[in-house]
Amino acid sequence: PDVNTLCEIFDEGAVHQRVGTFFHPSYLPARFLWLKRTQPDLFSRVVRWMSIGEYMLLKLFGETAVSYSIASWTGLLNRYTLNWDDTLLSYLPIRREQLSPLVDVGHTWKGLSSPYAERWSALKNVPWFPAVGDGATANIGSGCISPNRVAITMGTSSAVRVVHPGNVAKIPKGLWSYWVDRELSLVGGALSEGGGVYDWLLNTLRIDSNLDIQTALNKISPDSHGLTFLPLLAGERSPGWKGDARGALIGLSMANSALEILRAGMEGVAYRIGLIYHLLEPSLPSDALAIANGGALLNSPVWVKMIADVLGRTVIMSQVEESSARGSAMLTLRSLGIVPDLDSFPQITGEEYKPNIEYYERYQEAMQRQKSLYEFLNTESYGE
Image (cartoon, rainbow, N blue to C red; front, side, top):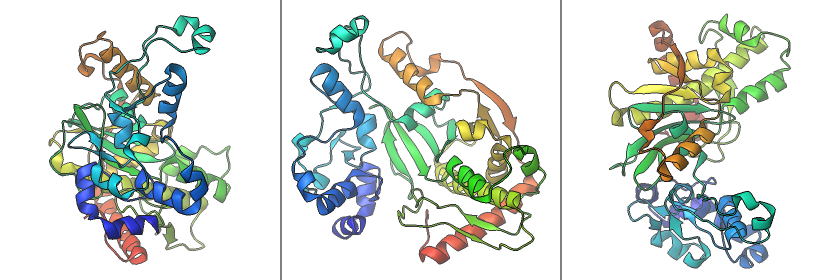
């Protein structure tokens, strides 16, 4: 009900262009309304609202701030002024002074407060930097630092993101725009579905853990199972932003095996990644590279090949195992002046997965089936 309330009061399209996000349970405007409605006594006792990174700075230094990167993921940061959005704050049951000051990623703190200075004497005068969004650092760490390289990340969930210099003129419908720092924006979409769907299917279908699953999946021809899998098992983020959406599987018969259902689920996730990529595509150079990263893809060549076939373009696998950690280190080294810019770091990539055009055409038909199923269940189109 809180998302619906916000949609009734505000022009969501205008808010989306101004703060870069939609009204959704993932973002703070709806969460503030929900918490006040469900736990009013607790809500009334709050003095400051902050993320875990801000809280840690407060404990270590006695003061705190929030980076533009983290603030942009709240749904409250005006992307034109780089300040908290006045229009939203005028309605929400919070005050500006309850939010942290805004700083860029290069802002530093030194001089740990007691007792931390005594406990960690070696760190007493080491510079500390504000937290940065893990999606932003994943892009940086995998070498996707410009529109020429698009990051396709999959862990438990998934995302497709691209870094742009400055603000994009118009955010495509269905996508968001966050910040890496005040000079680089991050445009893309996030999916609740990813490796979590794979794990759920493995456990639910009780697939033999001793089986060489990748080899077995590779023997199943693309979309040969007659199934359409809508993998919205945890609600929807991009591109339709229906938090109460649910998954569905149709076409099931006694002829289907557990492995076919598993492959249908993986293909279903790949189609959703394809939706995000196609929404981004008009803003990309024609020769943009698709870079895959994240544990779910590092451990599943079959899934990477599916994505290449769905997109109809080559996908290059990043060999960075911890792209968010590497991205944080890269931003820190730049802020310290040890390197002049993010281009100073080498690209670490591995195998290239080239698309099969026959499979691409087959998958386009399957994507349309999935889209039709979504629209049937949700009564409205998405991402268009």
